[in-house]
Length: 333
Image 1 (cartoon, one colour):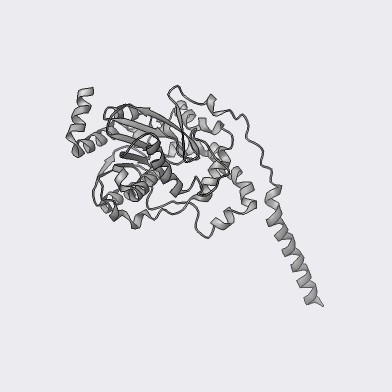
Image 2: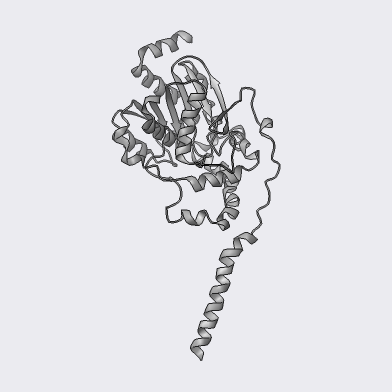
């Protein structure tokens, strides 16, 4: 009798817990984003848009002629992060900086047919699609952090389209989203309901993460913080960021580095607390044709925190690749 009563109580408790697990998340309110504005209110005079693979991509262009540099920013950033080096790079040729899906002012689709536009494969195809749309046959891909990951994956899949790589603190050996066993849970209706609320943490923790990315956080001005947070005034940025989280996977790059034989420059700060400096050192050692530059007193964003040193490293790299390219830069000054 007592045994039956125990199982009845246990069954009731488990049933209540199950209901809480299944229904509880839906009881958590997810208020709509406040003070959102149309994308047109956030554009700059030199902003451009072009449809690539069904997505309206925000980009800016600088300079002219060959070679062409395509700039791929990192997680949580936008083309704003390249502001200190676009003009110096444009002395060498054409510079294209664009906002990767889920970031900046690029369109954030929430429904689609076929490939998830936030997946690594779709982002690779977006790079090539952007090149095709702009009539670019080959380019030097310049990637920071997660943007470096996409740059390397693009070079692996389309080696004939990538002239060389410039990688600033690329994410290769860590990251890639949640562990495989967690992903099915993240895709449940319960987590899809809560996901945007979780994604909104980047709005409150964003300044902290930006300062963590700098060796000297005192140099992070209110203008820099505003530049990073401006895209968070768009509708559905939280939902798109959650879709990106769901689409994230391990890149598998570490096992394929030997295939990347093209000239590569790896730049890192000596105080990178996001992608540890030793990972960039290891990457340069494992790539068949790479040069390494470690910038002193610099964090995860050398193109922002130490743009002069960043450009010095890039200039010397380009000079080694093509003397004529370097000469033309001198003539244009």
